[in-house]
Length: 86
View 1 (cartoon, rainbow, N blue to C red):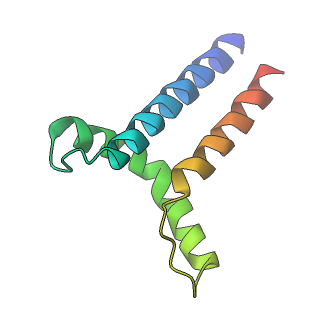
View 2 (view 1 turned 180 degrees about the vertical axis):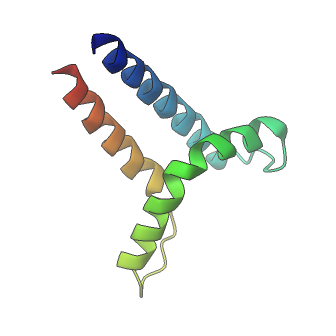
View 3 (view 1 turned 135 degrees about the vertical axis):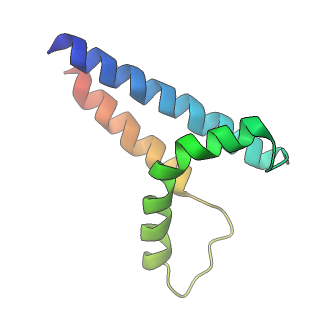
């Protein structure tokens, strides 16, 4: 059981790193058709898209200028990681 928890925490850490790099690339005007960016997008989008849909559903009338989904996913990953430490 301990090995499974450590593996899950490793995956969570990896996803946190991927999300941080993706947010950095979004702010730094990295070409969206470059292979590294497409790789990051392919890995992170399954986590980000459901959160993005929830956020846009909640903010029907207001258009979000900033995509908050990476920050929400990071908070959820942090909470899961904290629960796994116990």
